[in-house]
Length: 214
Image (cartoon, rainbow, N blue to C red; front, side, top):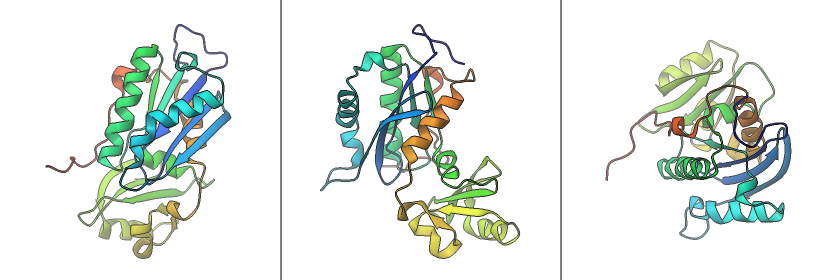
């Protein structure tokens, strides 16, 4: 497991995500979830604007300080470009200041776990007639919708998608139910901490397509 100066017998993990349609902040100790909070867009403010204040609230509710955190996990995309930048920047900054590991997990990996099955595929709207696509545990990139449809017709995948694509591709839209995405991210972070790929310097946004100009 990744090492840090504080020990890892019971590692306190802070995870957050501003890439998808809701922001969530979750606190865990190993695989045990201690607290989780969800924030949606409010008035004219995008939910990522509330990330820092929500982190403070979650820590305060658990009588913890930032210095008590021993690992950080975050969604690195794909998703909202603003959201990706927000959570990866905060994760890198906090991990550097606290001298703790930082783990990046993709949106597609997180959403794959909302269904307990081995044959789950994930397709998220990527605009330009394409979908960010994951199948067989592998991120395929931005795939044209016609190709995604062909793959789904010739396979037995259980599809997880979003509101924009569910009418065309079928499957289950993750936006139609309150799935415990924060809990999933925390558990995936804990699992990844057992590898060596968790230096904050290596945490980077996952831009499958380039950010929009202007």
